[in-house]
Image (tube, rainbow, N blue to C red; front, side, top):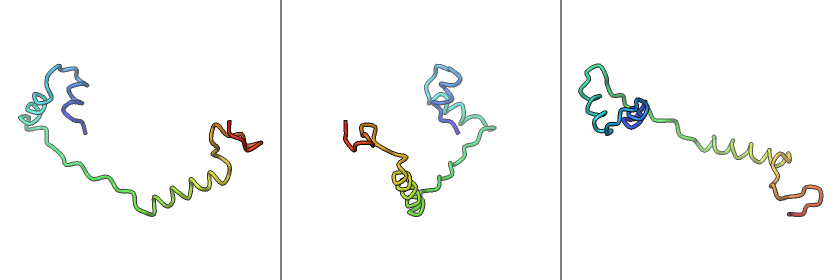
Length: 75
């Protein structure tokens, strides 16, 4: 689904978004559709993401860039 601004820029029309909107509104072959809502993240999704992050840190896959793992000193 594209906005009137997107259509105007893609086709390089050089008109205002309201002109595009009126043209689309007057055309009987073009109908508007209501966007379906995207599913929201549940608490379970968030908990799983946090667990994956903890596992990565525990496995040593993530270390701060300014950290020397051999001596434990920060640069």
